[in-house]
Length: 339
Ligand code: AMP
Ligand code: TRP
Image (tube, rainbow, N blue to C red; front, side, top):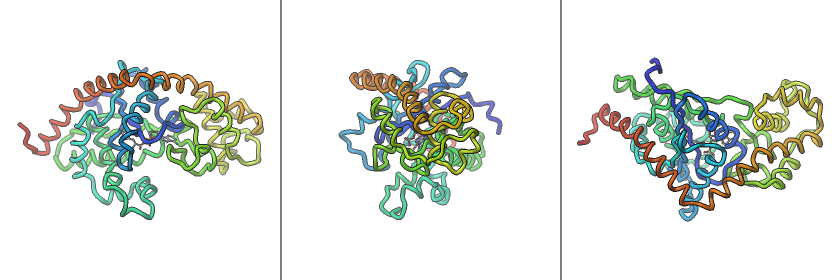
């Protein structure tokens, strides 16, 4: 199948479950912003239906949704140039998600690494939604015939599953309807690791706040967390190859590279053989320089919730303009009767 017939279109999403981290910023949001300066159409979504695959306090969910939207806006998503909305306002996502539940196979879902990690030894007690969520993610993407999906490394398998679902749908119904979406995972910090354990991903929900940088952390918190970040005793190597087998050192160098928009090699060339006493404060300064304006703007935006709601409502209307005809065609292809 050639993808020539599909408009170059980016779609990506972030769950409103806990605050945004430096992992979300480098692995996702910062790259979403950059796509606005390309020829791609850009559609960004706060995926609240995904958040409720695990318990969310109803008293906090709406504000968590607004806060992720504020993070997008503060980082530079322009609601005129991009379509920015929350998933619950466009019911087509859930409808296509159901159809894909009937296309995806149990075996495919069972192989998802994130499912295995999250369900652990207690799969029986997890929600059915948590198991099925990659097929809703496929619906998020394919509802817009999105051709490219920028995500962090942890989501690669889910975008590959999206391709499998598109292919099986096209094959089963004998039609070339859904594109083969590309995951886009480029740049140095596509898997930002936990600051206390370089073998674990930095996530919103780790036990200790010291293991992550939140996008709302102030300068003192950022400096303290990097100062206390776990490292080995060696200074920085001269070349990137020297980072092999040193997960914590590799992580801090990659974070620096991601924030500075340079390669890890360039970071090492700038700090040849530096000790942590030099490198950690430099990293903290850079992180504060990049994140402080974003967190200040997030706080300002959260002071005007009505404005965020207005932006998301308008975005939802624009999203539906693209989504509704694609869902309608899908219903027709499947043979579902709708007047
Ligand atoms: P989530 O917070 O799970 O909804 O993730 C939203 C986006 O942020 C996805 O594209 C993830 O791949 C990305 N992301 C989350 N955590 C990290 C991390 N530690 N490193 C890089 N990207 C991340
Ligand atoms: N599953 C993604 C995550 O946990 C979030 C997500 C939902 C997403 N739908 C998406 C990302 C569609 C990209 C495209 O990080």
